Structure formats: C-alpha cells, structure tokens
Image 1 (cartoon, rainbow, N blue to C red):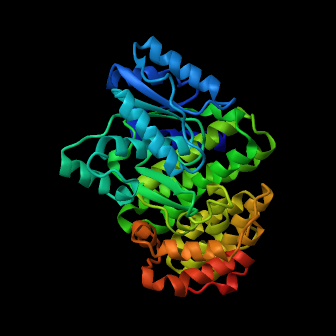
Image 2: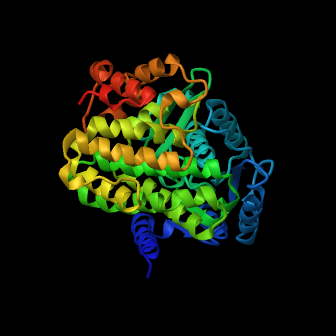
Length: 429
C-alpha cells in the first residue's frame, strides 16, 4: 500500500468515526440524498445554483428524491447563494422556505450556498421573534433563541460540491455584508446539517483556481485548530491535523497541473473534510479572522493562505510541538531544506512559515497582501476594527497566544504590516 493510500485510509477512518452513517462520502454517493431525505420527511425544498458544471449534480439529486418518494416543493429549485453568502441571499432563501413549508431542506452547492441555507433556516424558524440575522452572529445564540421560544430548526441535508470549507459537516455559517465588505459568523451546534453527502468526483469539473482556494481553506482549518488546541484535545487534533495537512501538501500542486485527476480529487475531498472535523474539535483563529475583512479583494482560501505564515511566526514560541510536526510534513515534500532539530522559538516559526510560502508560490498564489489587486490601508483598518468586534471575539480567544480587543493594536497591526510587505521582522512575539 502506498503512502497516499495509507493517508486516505486514515482520513476515511477519522471521518467515519466523526459522522457515522449520517454522512455519505466518497465516489458515487449522490444517490444517498433521496434516502436521507426520506428519513426526514415527505417533502423537501431544494436550494442550488444552476451553474453549467453544477446542473448534472443537481439533476442527480432531483432523481434521487423522486426514486425515494420525496416531493420537491416550491418552484422546483430555489436559487442558491453568490460567493461568500451575501446577506441578501440569506433573506431571499428565507422567503423561499417560508413560502414552501417543506419537511426538510436540501442545499446543493459549495460552502457559500450551504452557509446561506443554514442562516436562512435560522431566520425562517426563529425570525418571527428575532427577524434580523445580526441577532445570531456569535457563539451559541441560535440554541439560546430556540430554548427561549420553544422552537426548532428544519432538518437539513447538505450536498457538498466543493472541496473547501466543509460547510456540510460543521456548526459554522459565514454571512457577508457586501456594503461593509465584512464577513461575520454564526457558530452553533444547532445548525449542523442532519445529513450530508459528498461525491468527491463532482469536483473534477471545477476550475483549478477555485479548487486551490478550497484546498488552502482546508489547510487553514487544520493548521489553525492544531495551533490553538487545548491540551485535553491535543492528541485527537494532532491525528486530524497530520492527516489533513499531509493530504493537501502532497496533492495541491497536482490539482493545479492535472485538475481532472480522480485520485487527487479524492485526496483533496478527504483532506478538506478532515479540515471540517478539525473545526468541530477546535476553532480557527488569526488567519481566518483577518480573511473576513478581505472579502472584497480576495477569495477566502487565498486570504487564509497569505495570512497563515505570518500568524505562524507570531504564535511560534507557544506552538513548538505543533511546528515540528507541521515542519516535518513540509520538509518531506521538498518545501524546506533546513535542519528543524537545530531550530526553536521564533526561528522555528520563520522556517515553517517560509515552507508555507514556498507552497503558495508553487501554485501561483500571492504571498503578501500587497500583491492583491485593490489592496489598500482600508482593508487593514477594517481587519483591526473587526478584531475588536465582540461578535468575532471567538477568533481571538482561539489563538494559541490569546488576545483581547485592547491588545489588537499592539500585536495584530504589526502582523498585518508584515503580511503586507513580507517582512517577518515586523512581527512582535
């Protein structure tokens, strides 16, 4: 058995332990959608975009519902979300749910559509008491509202079509205010989809840049959770992170050069799903927090890929164990040539950060904020302001070097300056 096969088997075991029979993943799994829907009711509202590459997947989902006797209600299919789940799409999907009154929801798409449906489900179920989505940004506020009003959410099936955020497996819903250029987050176990389906081969038709964005988002999930994990969960987080990080590092260049390769698509599907498992064990932190303020100039995965090396240097003295494991992976794939055993503290962090930057360069990603078209001081100030917002406080607390709002200017601004110029010397430990 090859190292690649061993890694994939480790990932499959982890995912099965994580989700059990509530998740159908692998190859040729779309047909499970109808079976899952029949377990949840007799009617379903399907939410999806009819992109050229997504239409065949959607057709298979609709066929599966018919085979299992589940009626698609409404106007057939409610249009899904634009990238980054704009709040107006959330409200529009909410209207579709309220008009159709289905037994369950079936979201077909990438993370943006799935996140938008999660948020719309909250508004459709709780909106008669608290009708603004802002009421639910933060941690655990949906569960609090459900208990307060004696309400429940509709059961949801997430049919994932992108190896990226693992929205189909998690308690997170990212929603963007396009006017303010800022993304905010609902974090709540109540919004985890009841069932999930992901046929990894449906990603073969995705454009390579989109696939790369997704891979680096999944990499960020594994890295950031591993960096900030409490000691009690360290062993599980280490097992998850090692599998997910190595699968991505070993395969991401291949998806750039051979985007239709099935083995690579399976590997990245497993890896980003492992990233979803990671963020259910722990939480992301610095790079994801900053990425929320870059939505107007960069894709999410690209923003995360830029920021993680600089936060790695900032965190370095507190994450020596993690850095040796991560560094070994990057070195094994030719991205570092230094002797890790001779390094410690900040120097170890810089060495690993350079390995991350080397991987980004190999796939043509920018490695500083200044390389992003449209970047200006506006994004820096927006990121600083967002870091002080109580609704995003969980990201500061998840850091291995926890910050509060009063420390953002002193420590985060230098990180953003370093990420703008590529100068690690600007970062204060």
